[in-house]
Length: 74
Image (cartoon, rainbow, N blue to C red):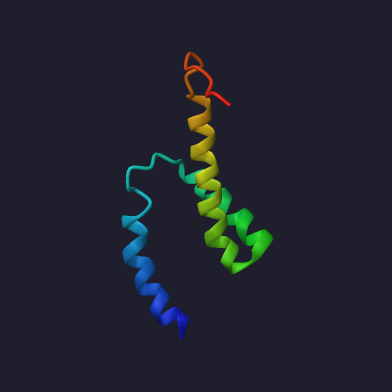
């Protein structure tokens, strides 16, 4: 039953969503999906790709952080 609903949605949304201004290599998404699948099954297939992609983006942002900015006051 779910395959009847999910399959057409996947065919429509997959080309639209990954390319929305995100410059993430496909290998990062693939590794996140495989790692999520291994750790959490079919739900992890989707959650793992999202979490790994967000982590990759945050990591790159952290690497590009300008050291000349003053540290925030405590």
